[in-house]
Image (cartoon, rainbow, N blue to C red; front, side, top):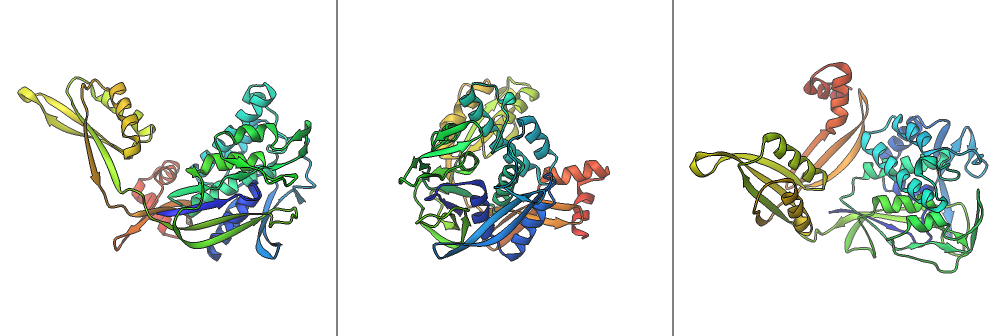
Amino acid sequence: MRTLYVECRMGIAGDMLMGALYELLDDDGRKDFVRAINNAGIPGVKVEAQESIKCGVKGTHMEVRIFGETEDHHDHSHGHGIEDIEKIIKSLKLSQGVKEKALQVYERIAQAEAAVHGEKPEHIHFHEVGSLDAVADVTGCCLLMEMLGADKVIFSPVNTGSGTVHCAHGILPVPAPATALLLKGIPVYNNEIESELCTPTGAALAGAFADEFGSMPLMNISQIGYGMGTKDFSQANCVRAMLGESEKKDGRVVELAANIDDMTGEEIGFAAEMMTEAGALDVYTQPIYMKKSRPAVKLCVITSPEEADRMAKLFFRYTTTLGIRKYTCDRHELNRHSEIRETAEGYISYKVSEGFGKKNEKPEYEELADIARKEKISLRKAYERLKNK
């Protein structure tokens, strides 16, 4: 299993995570990333990967300039509302998956800020996290995560730092109130370093991407990346990311099935859609005949063993069945990841699966369909255009 482990011994910030993930790419991937983020369409943004050394360790600091100014000198006083942020992100020249994930990250931040200030999310006026450099940090991390295509993402417990922090609202304790809310459910600690080590952007990214929090699993490491902060401490001020292969805990799936003869096609289709949205690995139907040659449908849902009970409850909720058959079986899986590729139609996300002596590659359906709709051509012709670079 392609596993990404992110170590947050010195906290986490958007630019530090971006630097660490950037270092996991090969040289071509790094060039593709910098080109993609700088051409994405964030107003006035230029992202540059700079070599940085902390406590003798070489890493990357991702410097974000807004109209030629760095984050430290950029004016954050005006900020942006959540609607402004959403408009910027939705207009970016990046994959739909990257934009949706970036919007999810900002939704987390908006909810936390609203709770702290007693406002509705749509009335929140961002300051630090709403500035364009933070938009670059968030979208950059989302793009890198897509490019790396890890099957599982694990974050270590997060060092928050201690002391106080100066922000637009005055002097606040570390972690700042919104950051503390964003860290709910995440294991945290501090080792008495008096500084804000975990920013709200960093906390939101960790919460959005981590499949779990804990120690590094047993894994064969292939790449290591160091994302450097700007401050200097007695410890190396960095986020460390490690990418490698870990063994899958379980190659098993559960199939839930029921024969149904008293629901319309629309009702069965809706039930299948609801269970797909709830996280089923697959949902499918088969036409069958039941007693007295009555036409019916066999509805099948494939899920993980851990999710089987939850999915069974949804099965009962959305169908009329009185019973569900449950089968547990082993399965072989190909390793899967996503890649961003430059094509004749621009940058497109590809799904890549390989293993057992086989490799499959195909563009993301929605991005291919967007090209077909725009040009009023078939999916096959749209795919042929991608190859005619």
